[in-house]
Image (cartoon, rainbow, N blue to C red):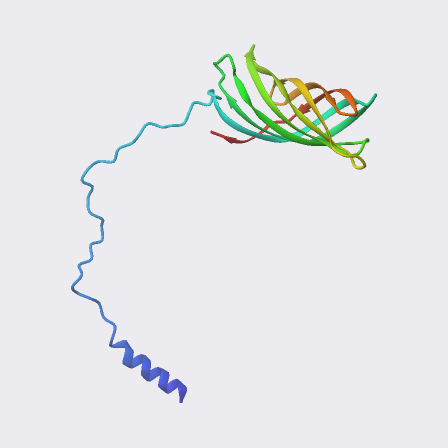
Length: 182
């Protein structure tokens, strides 16, 4: 019974649908009135490295602090403006965190950086505050000065002072992986 009702409804409604002959269908779009214009390519040459970079990557260092050697491993994020043909070739800031392998705790830092091009490479300096963290003591404040060179990887050396720990020295490497270039 239900099948008969559905079949009757389909037959009755099939006569309702029909094509509208009042609208003309054109198979092709209308021709252009003006030819398309092309702007020159805005991509810079591959050799031009000038721009604003966001670098992110791992860092590792050997540090002499509190009369002993220890190593740290962590990460570093840098925002750097590169202008290869200028006297001040690199300027920016870096923020990072690392954990001690034997001491426990870790270190946080924020550094300003500046560099210049010498012999086809960029070398520079850093300076900024440090917060030394430990599992069983309060955070200790300090500061550091460093030197670095960019060779695809970035070796660095840093000296500084941390409250209650005294002076420290470290050498390490940061692997700068480009995340963004503008």
